[in-house]
Amino acid sequence: MDSITQAALGAAMGEAVLGRKMGNRALLIGAVAGTIPDLDVLSRLFLDNQVYGLLYHRGITHSILFTLLAAPFFGWLAYRYYENELYARTWMQGIWAAWWGLFYLVIMAAFVGLSYWTTHWVPILMTGGLAIGAYYVVKTLVANYKNPDLLEIKASFKSWTLMFFLAFLTHWLIDACTAYGTQIFEPFSRYRVAFNNIFIIDPLYTGPLLIGIGAAFFIRNRKKRATWNNIGIGLSTLYMAFTFYAKSVADGVIQSNLDAQGISYTEFISYPTIANCVLWQTTVITEDAYYYGLYSLLDTEPKVEFIKLPKNHELLDQHKNHELVKILLWFAQDYYNITKREDGVLQFNNLRFGLMGGGMGDIKDPYVFKFRIGQHNGEFDVWQDRELDEDWKIGDILGQMWTRLKGI
Picture: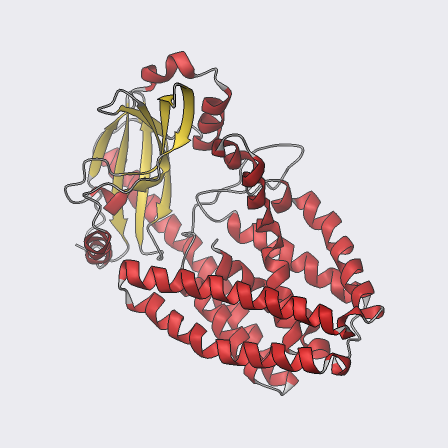
């Protein structure tokens, strides 16, 4: 899931375990704990090729082993930090203030950019909420900086360990629900667990968490703040459970349509479109091709129209033993096809992430998650294609998806 969701879920865990003892600081520290597993993205700074990032992101720091070993380690560090009263040092509060100030600016910038890019009311509304909340965050940090000696913390080592354990556990649990998947069995296995039941950004999951921790942040009564936090966790959990149900309904419709249309398939996956669990995509494997389709839970008839996509796997035969190509194949888990660009470079399209705009509209190259394979800077290379095609009009594409979500 996105970093805001992970931070919000971590904050909720912090409040649930330490809120009675630490107040708002439990929210802030929980938010940090919730984002620790994603620090594995820093490994990309030391990689010769960004394709290796597919291996290392959501790897060992998202594993069961890391959760079991790292929770008591971070719990001990936090316990000793407060036991030795390091928090009472003015310079330490200055570091915390600088960290949170930078973190908040990055989040704000991301939402401002998203608001400008999509012109949608949801990111615009959340940007406004973050702007209002910035005042109270700064006020709290300044008060801590000026009066660090007033921060009396009595949390036990056991409580700290439990908080970090829950923050790490819930982090990879919700990551495993996305199409990207999570290597929870590292370092013993690189098998990626991916339930494909929620998009990486879903306001209906994140929203209740933000409301719960937001209310807890402003409420001083400990019982009431705990109640609001629990409501947020409960509603988001119920929504997550509903996504599994929605997926099961979509799977049933997809399977019945494949049978009715006489499409002999090996297997298929279904996964939601952006920021919702109503409009579902599917990629189907057959012997000679792939089929892609859309189904909305609001459709008046349980019907799926499939688009046939060529495999062209033979174009990759001469490169299949290359290490970087092997990583792409591992990550795609048989859901990929190969296209040839006008410049002669091969394009590896990962079909586990659907098509831009759901395959609707006149888009020449609708593949979302794609890599180029061929000569690059005078030598053979594999690199991710992050260029936006000229015919990708994001506003129009989102509008088409919204129309399709409402059903046909």
